[in-house]
Image (cartoon, rainbow, N blue to C red):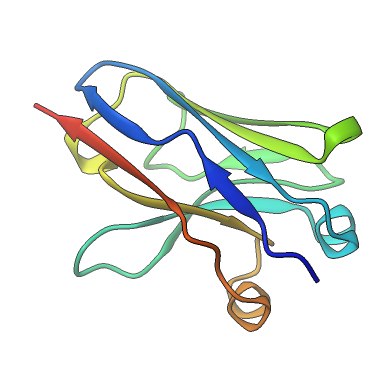
Length: 117
């Protein structure tokens, strides 16, 4: 099983945009889908967006600002983040959208997103 690889994080001003990429080529991602999680200090890792065979959805905290999409041909999942806020700061990870299974599979390095006021 190959762990997913995240990229695209960086430093951005509030109100700006970033696009994160997730390379998730394992069969388990094709069958379970892919989710983007956000880890902020002192808080539990939060699932902010997911895309599965059923469709895509985002959490209330990012709804209307974040969009998840995928290109099946190269097994890449994107997270387009617009109108970023300081509370979006954190390390972003991609994995299957079920936390328990994701933990069992193992987490990648993540990608840091920092939003300055």
